[in-house]
Image (tube, rainbow, N blue to C red):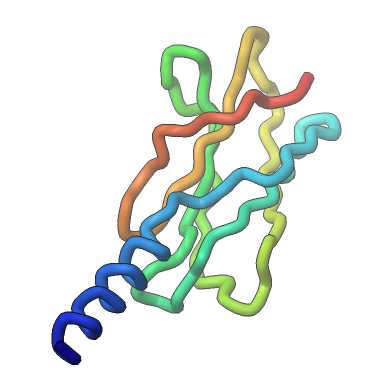
Length: 110
């Protein structure tokens, strides 16, 4: 019985940390794009490790790599300067070190 409970707890804990990074806020000021992410970072083994700006067809305009976990700093904001943002709809997509790029995209405000 105890083994079954432990297995259930391990499965629950794994699924609780399987959520992709959430894009909480996106701000644009000139060519500076600031993105606030929230993610259940657990340390070097699983953390939000980037976000990017992409066009409607998925062309990557710019990428902000995140080089370390933010376990104690949630949510957190990081910026990227892009000198010439192209016209047309642009989106932000986030990434984590375990699950890769999220399917979810958030429109870049203009």
